Length: 236
Image 1: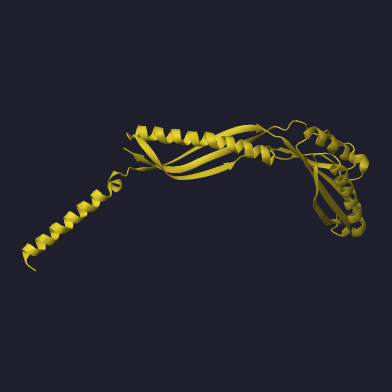
Image 2: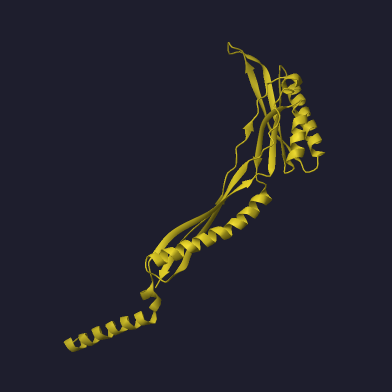
């Protein structure tokens, strides 16, 4: 091929590239991409109470111990279910051998738990006090109900989104750009409340369990957090 022919092909190639660039103006005007995050947080009063009560027995026969413990727990569940708004269920049940100081087996210990839950905190507190006269109070916990947490997260999503947009606009202005375009978003929610409060209770019979301390009535707050993370492209 002659030099004139090669020059003509080169001219056509350059013209083709220029036409492609004109056909895709977005590629030439794409701005830098920024990764941003924002969050909204609220401390919300806990509206649900959880009580864990336990029954424990020691003796030589596992079968008799299981029967005694489960009988106590089932009676507590039946009494709890008679209270409007209270949910009751069987918790963990464990069997362990007892040992002497010399390391020899000496009978068995059976322990079982019942879990009570309700948003009617005064009613559950009174029920827990009654049952605590014959069962051990293992722990008391306050938390947000699922309905309350969902409603609060819905409100906080709007706040977090507003904060994210404001931060993106501020970042665009700080770097000399007129606007921005959302490219990617991730939404996360979470939070934590106070942990369970263990209650001091001695192992043994009803007389010992009757000395259980009064139930706390202050539920405290739980933190609810909604976080928005993502990336934006700055626009001139």
